[in-house]
Length: 198
Image 1 (tube, rainbow, N blue to C red):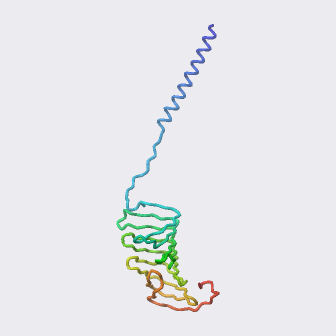
Image 2: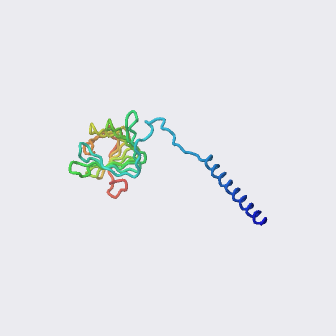
Image 3: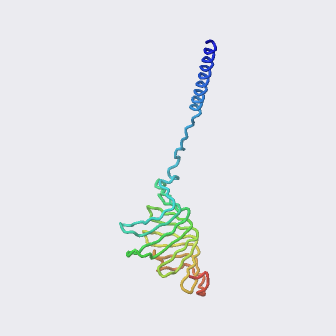
């Protein structure tokens, strides 16, 4: 009988110790719980209000589809002093005529669009193609949608049928069909088989 009481006492002691250990673990874990908070936005002008990845979308003007954009990264900064869209990883751009035919294409490494001014700035390996298949290459280009004007102060190379035309400074309409080079530097005939040609 005394032995049974002794065994029960040992069992109760072990159960009490185990309960105490479990409670200590619970209390310890409650004290070590860490809450993670994100930093507050210090300057809303530097924080995008929209960030989209791998985008293909159409843009309308007055209810009519005018453009198609394809980009790996599109960020919109609505709270900047001059609100703008940023395409820091490149942009492919198709412009549609009233019959929805592509009448101009543009590719570049980076682009910025100031939404209130309707002004584009394209930078890095800017390549444009018009409906006639003429190709325009320049390091940077501006496109004023309100004035329907494209222009650049940089070097421009135009591949046109069997000619390579080079110069500095460029103005054009939006479809690259009526253009002029401000400081022409040369016209070079090219072979149809030439890899630099069209």
